[in-house]
Length: 361
Image 1 (cartoon, rainbow, N blue to C red):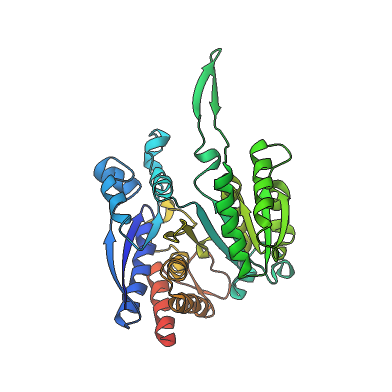
Image 2: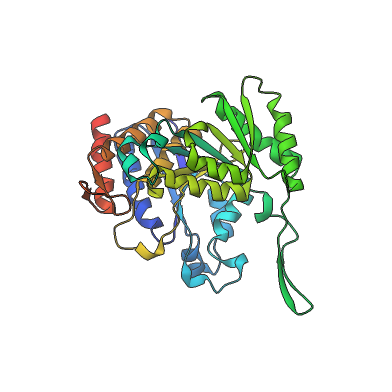
């Protein structure tokens, strides 16, 4: 049995709490003999700034480059909002994406039957919702140059540059089409080609790439229409492929379809399928240390790690089924608890998933 080398970066806010519960699942799986691994841990984000003065150190970057995959909690700490943008906690995740070439962010949006009542959308709109957002991560306006601020005639002006190259668009489009081959064979490419030259290039390149996938249906959709359709008829989508800023916005919008942002995982992959796996909910500093955070998205992110980077679909299936079975018991952390359900803590939720996992194993 291969021994996997896993890098654990818990980060800020609720990151350490949810990561602790994920690690108990990992240790249980190891005890059963299903998997073997070694763990290396390091500080990132605000925790790293307090320790070393930087949101991520070169030593941490060197460490993660030797790993088979990264489990990432969250970064973000209001106490550092006074710092320049380039040295705030959030720069840790941006630097990891850039240094490791993690260009493809995959966010599955799946409706758990047990949580349909939690969504703000009508039950009939949620039937058969199961799609994936593929977001390009290392280009676009977040990384484009020039960027900054200057004064013109005494007035402050801020500026950022939206930019994409053909190869950047080609590789993210290929990720989307390959995912669609294993799903319902439909790709929706989201852009704003009617007003942005960068997005016209996006549309042209995606159309060209689609010629290599004759059995995949390609649909182009402007981002404003896509935002509307996510609420109007989300079940129409299979794989959405989009750029960095549009993907950032649409994926958070889509998270509310499910009834809880606390249940949504994500994977950020490079071309070799090395990945960083994290929940999408952020550091939530307002509830940090209160034992109320939802650890399920962290656990589902770990399941994605086993599926995409470690090639252990069997373990991914076990974790996902254990989470589903736990939801069937009508227990919840405060973020998605509703009338008739029993509210439990972060630690208790972790224990309940382990119970269900032990039944499956």
